[in-house]
Length: 174
Image (cartoon, rainbow, N blue to C red; front, side):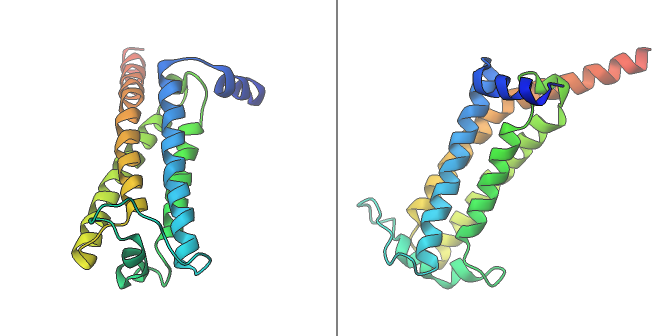
């Protein structure tokens, strides 16, 4: 495993297909964080309007002010977007250049988390539509980002799975 200074260098300067995909996942996860921040500003009264693209399917003001958006944990739902995007960012940033071999559980956890994000976002999008007959643009932007992040997380997860299996085989032979 890399030392902190080596990790710093690898994450900032390293080059590999896995690291490039991880950087994209971080950017996509921060789209979710940004969407959650914007909607949180609306849901807590700091701003009074959420602009939407000019498509009839979107009415973020209606959706994000509805009972649907406040029915969990006595809280608006957008702050949870910030937390979940942050957790995905943290998993994508953890570990060095060769983490699929050094820390295989981390890429596997990232893949699981991104797939959970997709499932959760799709489920919430269905609920959003059923409750409001409209969609929140910011939430759907997060869904698209989650789908892309999940696709990007899978190659390293497969590599990590192979690394785990190879390690078990080598220990069984020894």
